[in-house]
Length: 472
Ligand code: NAD
Ligand code: MN
Image 1 (cartoon, rainbow, N blue to C red):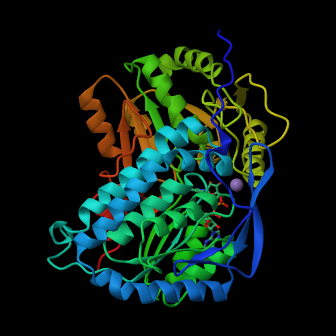
Image 2: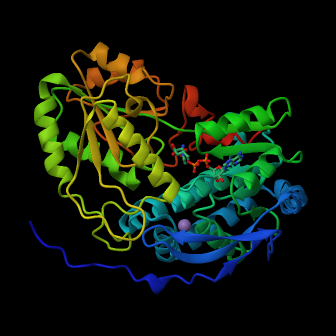
């Protein structure tokens, strides 16, 4: 194999301030304390971030409420101008944002640069286009915004989840208080600067930083009309309980344990690429990751040999190196969770194999790993690991594949690999999953709705469907 020369992206492309305040009513303000965000690839502290307490949330919600009056009264075509402007600034500043996201999150620059940021801009462009066409969206002749949206997002796609939340909310005339995850606040704070650069009226977007408590104050605030959450099923349950009976509208996008089903007639090399992309993309920190490989028994041996050969070429290391495929695990806590579930997999009797790769000394790392000999009773077949760990199960008939694929409390996504078009349609029809990919995986487009069944949550984001969550 070739040796690769280092190909580092320039870290100094982006300026990171030593500290950041809360973004409330168009200004940066102090919170009730501070916390640090680190680079998980080397544990270096990147910046000190304001911690929002209940009073700060009060102020942010009040600012959003004040701004709602004039923002919701603007013609859609005027709101669209701001959204188009934001989309263009994101494109212009995409390189800065890609570096910032890689530093704060640990994900490889080739993903932030080629996946996250282009999709972020596309999402704003897409919803900008809807802003003046809402009465033709199929939700009545005069759909109205809900008011103030309280939005809480996770750390796996910080800027993309922000776009999924903010773009449809603003297009429909709502105002926003958004809380990014505590390990990845920097791109949301950069977005606050973009709002100023776009001259978005103060209070339309407010960014409050902090951990779970800050999120809880926000979603429980009595003057929030709409709650949008992406994160763990456990927190999603708490939120569903806390808003029950309040009249708040809620969308929840929670975990997943997707089946990636490979039939015996699938093109093996293509399927292997899809399996690798399905579970090792973004270190496996993906709610729709193809974390359960269901492979037809007759090709299992050949496919696994091929998969291991391919996995041996995966490059793990410096997220800012353009050749890196797998970056750092986002946090020490997440690494501990992945490590623990993998040990449980071993102790329950599954066979563990990890790609041969050297892990850096500092930072949080986990080698791409597969477990074979997994049965449906194993915890690694049922629980979301949210890391670069694949559980492999086999099946004999299409009916058995469907039965196993659906045997999960989740239902976010699934994949089907076969040459037969009729089989794709027949199997997809029986899968209880919000998104089913055929002969591909992890493909996203702003025009396509995304969301789950069962414990994966409710409501849809993206596409025309995504407007409904923000309209009365
Ligand atoms: P989490 O659900 O605790 O955090 C997600 C967001 O919710 C963060 O911004 C967090 O600060 C906030 N939050 C936490 N507690 C809250 C509360 N009570 N009220 C309001 N907001 C609250 O997720 P995590 O602890 O970062 O990760 C744990 C597991 O969740 C992962 O291992 C993974 O399985 C799953 N997860 C899923 C997704 C997804 O995209 N579906 C994203 C992140 C994590
Ligand atoms: Mn960080």
